[in-house]
Length: 473
Image (cartoon, rainbow, N blue to C red; front, side, top):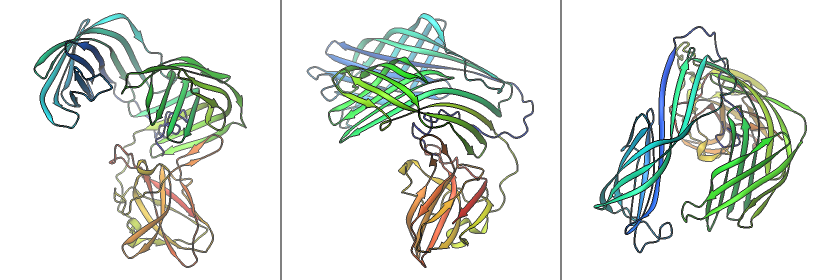
């Protein structure tokens, strides 16, 4: 399964799983709190910039940058810098929130400069802002999310000097109650648009969505001269069009800009229904493609056409079902778990095989899938076929999990990848997490087919497996 913005958020999906029998489960309750604090100001002798975030359940991270005169902040190299993803903490009592962090400081070349620390004393200000309700679900749960602004001052100890720096931030209090935590059924509807413009060494991306989670928009612009990132957005999007205003910031230089996106939508083709299947999930998605007509304009004079060449817009409605079945343990590995045990495949045939008992890691890795390093697989099985001189297609449609497939030629212990595929993307909308790969073949050449389950890039221990249906024709 591709993990790009268009494939994840872009499909407007709450990717979930196909449940088995759902019985009553014990009530699960937990609370969490997240804090983010930004501190930045000119100080006696220089300039300090820092951002620290901490979450009770998941930890946090933070950085600090110090420029000493005559260094110019964001233009010249930092005099001292530090980053940590371990030495961060926060406590909260009533309206008071205290955030602490410590760093091993270095110069920009990595030379050690000693230790630094921060203690930020913050107070809640303004009214608490509850987030809107989550999309409709028969998962018996209730999640309460309340955000509140913070203001205060941080004391920094850097290079033997104490600095007092004003800070702002946000504290988010989360409370979750679940009465059936092992299953999930939900629906979500919305509208979204993503536009991408590539011109030489410049890359620009615009994304906006409004669904059961609310409105969200962002943008990113990168050129040889610098980058601009969205730091705030307001506006709306529905089936008739989109209007967004964004604030942009170059984090390296500190330069700011604004942007607007305004476009109308028109129906493009007919609605498309697709089914997204994973190991323990099934989503039914109905999508309607929209033709886009408008422009994305930056305050520095740059302007981009919002049209069907550069933008993919759609309405979507999805119904997702998920569970965490315990089920029986995986059986023994099949004989074709390795390439030496590859089974010959008669072209035009179909096989079904359980892959749960296969080795977690693939015997031969993949390099040419569309998403490159982000695509990986495991729990693979092997087949061979003989080339005919015509194109041959390998198709995993109908499998019970998210599949990836690759084809190789072999010379002794050396494998040469001739093709790889993860998902199938339909036009103008729709997708499948089943893989379909077509390659050109040479007559008489033996090709090795390795088929398995999608492997998460950041969680390589999580690999899809189950009933694999493979057709080669």
